[in-house]
Length: 401
Image (cartoon, rainbow, N blue to C red; front, side):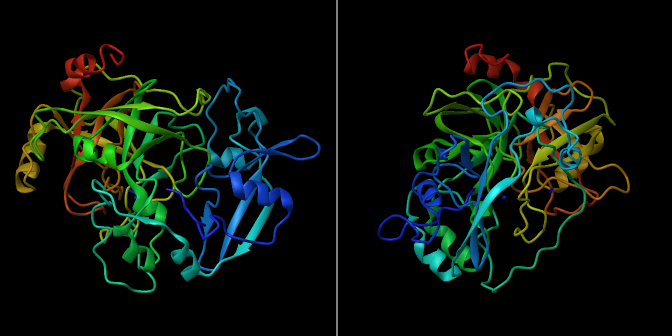
């Protein structure tokens, strides 16, 4: 459907040395909020480990913003779309942040950027499928699938991302080919279903990835920066009977934070589980993700997208599954785009939420599908939450129900 942030600097002194105002130097060193002489609080778009969220081949742009209503819970009657927010029709308290008040542009040669990266070699690093198999052109053609709408600022507060926060040695050839680092670090989606529990697909996570340092990010819309909330992966529980393309493609992740600060519920909050059994054929569902937008594997979406699909009768879906090597059991939901709509889920969307359009509850997670990202006659296959409710309750000791 539609693949986290840049980690620059790390020259010998641990910083990129640039001529910027003293305040900007403080921000560059800490990546955290500082105060001006008038005590107005500022923060850098990005987080403390990634204070340079935007990069082109010639320059890095550092945006400094003044938060509005940051750290306070606000009740907004409606969840504003980006278009409405851009027109200034949304109260300040409902915005994620104000417009940039200052920008610092830092000249940066692309090769110098590559040389500044610290590559790590750790077992358990799993780069996104298809992203590393490429010739090394100086530019990468992208043929995008159409369909998929941008999610509004508060449209999916339960959306989770599984990502690798470091720079793996496997990334090097793709970085040299100018594939963005955020596209390489992104691995899968997921959904927050309780305060410290994220649900995803079993093929998206295992314990070796936890040991390698994969993390979960919540409240993130743009993979190339933004005010997301990052969590450690403490435990991974994969459904024990999981077999690829056969069923049981479900996993639970127990997460924790290094701080006691809780994100505002308008930005991060869990989604309830759908407990109503099978959805009828033709029912509308919304699927969310940052998955790649091209069949060549190089077009992951930088922004969170959603696509509306129609549930397909399981008996009608079974022959499609058999032809593609899938056994479509009662634990699957099949869905595809309505007629004349060119949209489909793809790699990078895996593990992401499938939401019933009527109840706005989590009905499934993205499991897999056919070989193409652009719409074809093949449905995609989604692991049905209702088939695993007992396992979810037992695994979480009733924290998710």
